[in-house]
Image 1 (tube, rainbow, N blue to C red):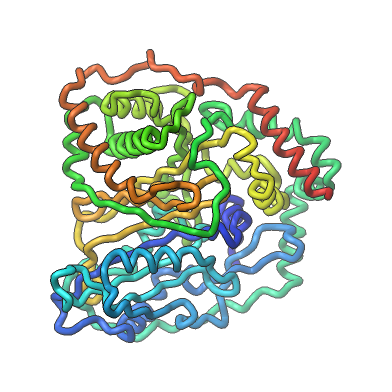
Image 2 (cartoon, rainbow, N blue to C red):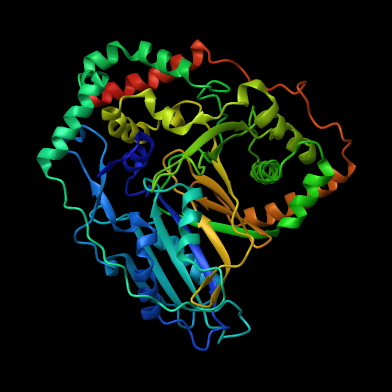
Length: 510
């Protein structure tokens, strides 16, 4: 029995019918080197034989009554792999557009909480090559809940499930599995009580009047502990920060990774490949806003997750991330100079040197208030009434540069999606694999209009950066570049946050 962290639990509390909080993946396989197409039954047998490498696949949530504490992961004694798998045959509609449309509909559906939080759809009849109807291709549409993994561990899981050799290994019999008995309600309640005794602030937080009376001191005390680079709620308003619906769209395009590496070499200095990827995303967003006649008074702010995994710090599941709030310098007209500025913002500028530990963000409120605050954050549309904390997340996940296989079928391409929630209608996830970088835009089409244009804008942005980098003097951008957001935490920002908390508490009384 292992308790979720506050960060992991927050993804459960943020989830709603219009905002499922799972990470998605669409994996395309070429099976032409096999003697025959990969049958669904073979895939099920293969996956069954590999369940032992991913323990979370057989663990479900155990909620604590009255939400007196965070849930636990426990072995699911009723686990059945069939409850987590589905089969779809596209038939005569096996093109990529049909597959992506199917994936969007599947990813709109939340995972069921009464079982382990994952699901895989095996898609047959997919044509990897439109000119070859007998291409023997198939696809997997994967959903893994964000409470169990982050984007980095999601890639690790896929790497564990797949193979590094084109020769199909013999499918072994599943290893014996003996689930631990489900803990009793009494044990769970006793554990929750022990946790409350260790953290008396959680008990006092249940009294709403007491929580309101101490709100200002709590926020000041907790916020002063966080290495925040500029005041929260000071990102500009943008078209991406509006209330979302349940509709989802995944827009993806693939680029040659060598082009981005060439830009990095041309810009020189300490510019990293990640800086180039962020600069590419920033230029794409800059062009999108310009095409829709949207002007912002400040540069867009991205939340960029940073993995803190290491050989000495490993957990079976969960989110092992830090996060950095990063000014994307979208007000800078030169896209090559912007990359230097992004690098300076992320590395050289003193306020940015420490990333915000993601699990410390949840310390703003006691854990017994997490469910209330997360849900009312959406219901009260706080990010729309005030300036948002950030405009969108951008995650760059390094993937394997060698081919992966599933029973002799080669993984040729993958698309990735990330969860949205209210006031966050766009997320960008970039994943590299075998010399290519796939940039994925997960968006709500009712918030982000004309989402299909993002792929063309990305290509145009890369070309523009290449041209600008070739003519840019090697001076970069230094500490003379200052933006209004580079301020210490001010009482004005705290007042805005307290106002939001006060509204939450008033709503709770009602």
